[in-house]
Amino acid sequence: MNLIEQINNHKYLYLTEIGEPEDNALRLVIEEAIPDFEEREIKIGDSLVTGFRDIVSDERCFAYEFIFNSYIAYSVINESFDQADKAEFFTGKLFRNYSKSNFLDYLKVSTFATAEHPGVFSHYQLIALNHIVNVASINSPQISVLRFPLGQDFGLENNEYEN
Image (tube, rainbow, N blue to C red; front, top):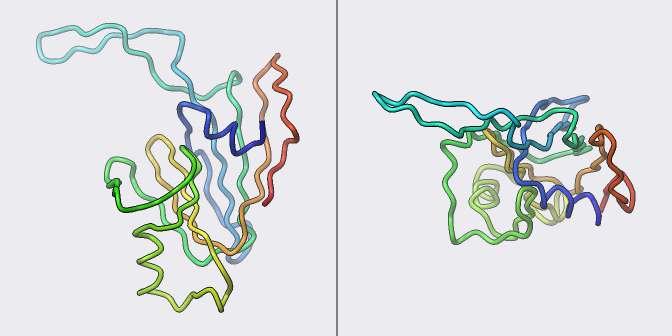
């Protein structure tokens, strides 16, 4: 299994860091997230609802670094305001590659980026709890594992991905 397949097999992800390590380069750190061991209860009105579990990222979870050495544009959307559009086409689950999207349409009208300049580019999207990150780039990201879950051997083909 490669890193993209592994990331897409996780149930939840958290975006924990976003930044530009240098001009027009983008670094994202994402962590796998899982339901916590501890159940808790929530009071809603006069009712007590039990069996809730927080979604956490800890030493039992993978952490990954995505580096885009250059980008045309990126956006971060509060997950609560993202709007799925059935007219968009993509592959992947939590890490997506779009062939048709509203973000690509936006770039056509708001930038002069084309297949001729700076070159053929892709729309990548990362689906995380609380954040949706869209990135348009001529380069696929370099992805590496920052943290392996304690005491587990996963037999990854390698710990880096670059297409």
